[in-house]
Length: 275
Image (tube, rainbow, N blue to C red; front, side):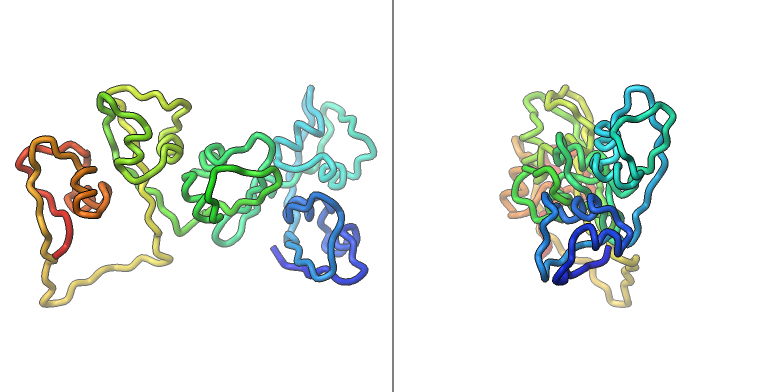
């Protein structure tokens, strides 16, 4: 992407010819709903217009193809210099590759289309709903058609803990237990329903930032192992209550004690925090 500042006398048509990018592409990338632009306005201009060839099949329409490639009918018409919307079986069309997301160094730009929701977008790109919300400073799950979202492609690594569903569990209670969300659990497990079965194994996502380069931790002479406050498990205890008591999280307790499940045994000694 490059930035272009609108000058006096500029039009979208003139800018599109200057950079060799269709008007509809510029409008979509900048979430413009009309051809009106203002002097001093900054526009994002794709540095290249990558396309691929699509062969029209029986039953195809420009509308269906536009939806499939996350573009617009007008953009397809511009790209292919069409004088009509009527298509022929076997006809070859150029369709924009970036319609499913424009790649940048750290993230993909995705333009929201009719019927999209955060869960579907997260599933498509292999990230979590919370990852997308954090990257875009979203405070709700509501999206608008034409809205552009940054989808992180690196520096975020999703790790998982396994959890076995018990009687009385719900996705909401499990999400609370692990300090995550119902959407993230459904995303991680490709769940289409919130109904759970006793004994079902769920992957619980835990996000960690991945350093830009691997850092090897070296301990010199005189290194002293940290000392930890411990807690002895009593009847009726669970990790959620213990975590809340010591102002930490279930994930931290599991990591600190190398636990692979949330099951506890009476008399078990847990590290709870560093002294």
